[in-house]
Length: 212
Image (cartoon, rainbow, N blue to C red; front, side):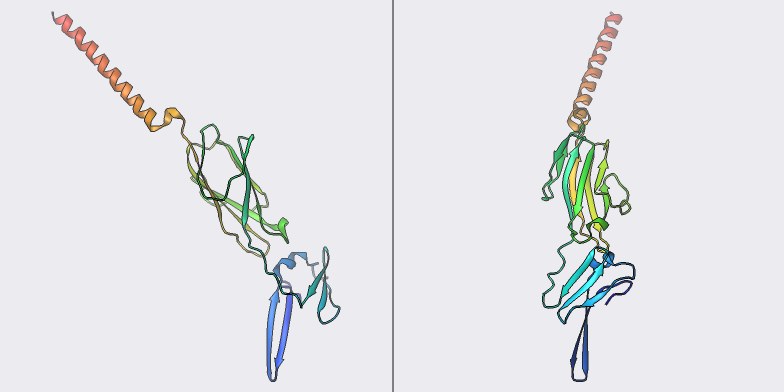
């Protein structure tokens, strides 16, 4: 059967006065339909052909449906400062970059093999973005001139049937420059105190010399 919102098979089993109807739908085929001009051709009891915009789909009711593979986001690579390429492992470990390596490009894809071109992606960089980006077919996201701090990139995908993938996360840190670190601030404060103490002693020494 084919409707405006579904395509699938109805399995009708009659047992005496009881009739059991089982419906199996194939949402991955819906984007391939031909706008109401589809044709269902039952060749025999086992083989059915369905016309689509890309040709014909063959359905064999003797074969078990393997089920749809998991729908996930894959982060293929990171391009740092439009130069170095990294391949982050899906371990959840936090990456560390110097303050000069603060422009990052993320290239992604999704494990959707039937209608991959219809997949849309959303991005959220915790520590920088306030909300998810609108769904977009773009398979890349770039952030430039990120200030020092801790971040977590979140990516998710939406397919043509409305399924939302699990969120893929990548934590990373843009380190502070050495002169903005805590130990550098403490060193500057110590030098300032030493300089202040030295100037105080010099002024006090001159003041005492004037009294005599």
